[in-house]
Length: 297
Ligand SMILES: [Zn+2]
Image (tube, protein in one colour):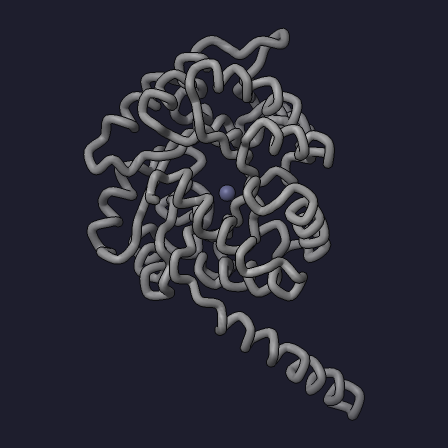
């Protein structure tokens, strides 16, 4: 190595030392990660459910919500929970084609499963019309609206969500679909509405403002900011503009090659602190809002 590369290397190390220290400083007591991917899965994952919950408990997290795009996780959460007495473990179901799409019976059964771990119903994610159309593929998709109306079965899904105090998560629906469906869900008695990684769905500032005004909670995920640091600018702007009450933060980690979920949450919190988001705002987004959605407080 020549002299310049040594200087670059050393200044890199010196620059990252305080950041490492900052991350280790982050206390995860009370923090809940509502976006935890783990195997078994049909996509490559960094760890399985058992490993994920044990790492999360060891790191001091309060709770995790296991998410799978293709199969429900209420049963897996109930099993994994038995390993970790000091961690709340929840699951849910994503209404992609693998479970029959907008399938009220799949939601009904999930809610009835022993253990009571099923808490979130995601509208279609990878099989959503918005996702498939935006990707420009010819894959089949599962629409949530047709001719401006909710598809068959969706109103029943909303009613089952309401009956069982579940969280309606919007999956990979478009911002327009989200805004059209919020009042339909409310009319069925749905109280908790979570907008899955709102920036990943290309919502405009105005649409985000409308979602907040409609009482929805919006998810800001670390995966997006980890992959593209400029995303933090968007996050900080909307938190300061609309208040932390309208947001949760989650990792969305679990992909093969990425760090574990607790490491993701720690980095996210450190990044928010470095951008002058207060500890009170962080606590709202990482602790109290997720706890409220999951019925923990
Ligand atoms: Zn995800």
